[in-house]
Every structure is written in structure tokens, then in C-alpha cells.
Image (cartoon, rainbow, N blue to C red):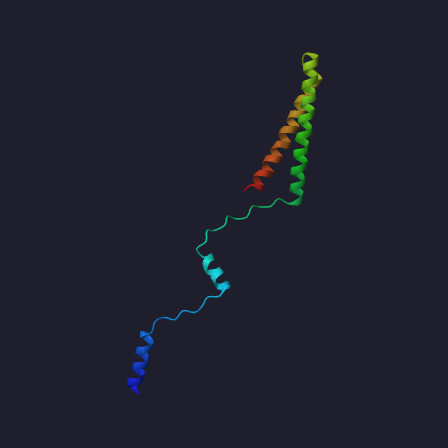
Amino acid sequence: MKRTLVAALALAVAMPAMSLPVGPADAQVLTGRSAPRRPAPRPRLSEAELNRLAEAEDLIFEIDGEIADIQAAAETAGGLTEAQQAQLDALTRRREEAQRTVDRLEAKRNR
């Protein structure tokens, strides 16, 4: 009996390793291990932030039009009046503020 047990054990150890067929789901998991990692998903802007971004872009477009109108009027009149210069300065400040909002939200979206 002892010899039979030793012979069976020797036969089991000497047998080549058996391979089991891999199903499609297992194959997908196994190939995914060496695949390059995807970058982290971009942070999404909330609905309110998307609205603020659109409003700021629209405001910049409108202000650019107003600035162009004032400069065209100044060219035909031969120069800016004090009122036009004050209006131009105020529009420039509003445009810079809107541009900062656009830059901040776009930077957040592109992270």
C-alpha cells in the first residue's frame, strides 16, 4: 500500500500542469492588468458654474463691442472725451473681471 501511495504521488508530481480554457470575461480582466492606466477624469463643472462661464463669455463679447464702438466714435471725433475715457476705463475693468472668471472656470474644467 505504501508503494502504491508513493507511486501515485510521484506520478501526480511528474504530470505537467494542466491549463484550463480561459473564458472571454476572464481574458478581458487579465489583459487589463498590463494596460496603461487612464488619466483621472476631468472634474466636471456644476450647472451653476457652466452658467457663470457662459454669462462671462457673453459679457466679454458685449463689452468688446461697446469698446469698439467708443473707439470708433473717438476716431471720427478726433479723440476721446473725458466721459468716453471714463466709460472706457469702466468697461475695461468689467471685461478684466469677466475674463478672470472665464480663466478660472476653464482652468478648473481643463484640470
